[in-house]
Image (tube, rainbow, N blue to C red; front, side, top):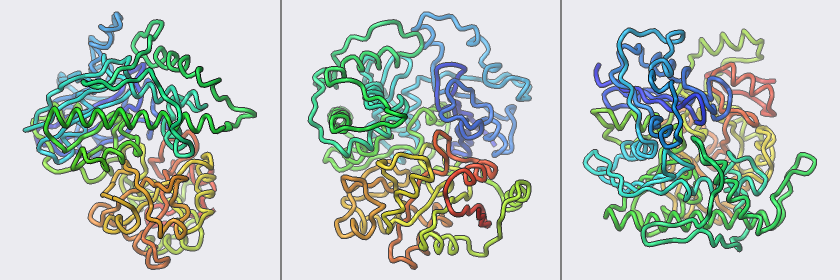
Length: 546
């Protein structure tokens, strides 16, 4: 074994979505987010000790067998830009691998990688493209909020960067706050946008021949993070539309104005993104497009780009958010790169039936072992039951992709209500389906494969009445295409459900409660199951009932 590279994201302050990833001979062996182990969503200001330990254990190696360590942030540059002296930068090994947690003898080689270059690498090197246009967009990296690059012959060349002041991520986050959400709930704003009309203009944002400009004047100091300063600036700008939305008796009420503002912000984001795609393709000559950065989780934007005539193919990794810079940094410094497109996100922990049953007994669960768990769960869902589903290796990234999911019947309008209740989610928020990959075009207009739930499509008219839980208010849906060769157990479940109901489609939302990360362990699954309203838990080959 050689060419072992460990990738890391996380720091003791400022950062979010701490994660670790392990590459061996150019292949992704393991990856996980720290939030799943410590049960704190986004793992703000945390180091990925548990994620690193998992990756090493999964590969059966120690730190002494790791050739290189790559971090998806250039913290030296970040602190220099902020004019701050940080003594912890002198000993990165002690920061990331303190001896009280890790045992090693060798001197570790730790490299700090530019944040947006790590984002670009996380997409390009896993896309399967030999050459591609690359766009990264998020809140901010060290001194930029996005970049345009070209990937070719295994190399990435950054062509231009966008300053932090021009951050599309911070613009969208600020509108989420103005609509009444938390700053880290941009996905809710995307869902709300479908209820409104894009009637408002943001004159502060202008398209230019080399990109775009935001004519705002942020005030105050930034330190390491400009999000507060820029978000406050945008919130002042947005007051021209009226007051910020605030909860009344703990509940948000969305008037037409806030729905229309959400739709207007979404359209502005899409317009800028399409403009950048056009510019990038013109610069590079490549209609293969790689996207990364938190903004690339916007499936409505991604769908618009795919359906435009600007690109032939698009790739967005399942961990487009900051969790992805751990694998991106590792890929960048690795001497070997993957040759094929990443086909799945099942890179986290898994648990055998024996381990699962031990936990079930330990906590006094009422359970039975089932010979054909897929068939039994298909029958339950066809009979209107909501089932928590815990199988195989945990997904990495913010979307549940059929291994840590809560499932329901798309043919019943009540399923939408029941799944949102089970999650403690607002009822206006959409849900997502899992569809057999070979049947995507049957149910969706202008469809393509979407293994990571990062594209939005319209549901065909003939299925809008038959599958009411599938639809968002604008008849769109954010599907996962399920490949038989990638996740056979989940594929078989959907196939068996189709034989019972006539539709090889199942509703899928992430297995977690309100404000929680997706479950990782059997204990997490039991804890979440007993606190939600799902009817059953299918965990390994066992069925648990309340």
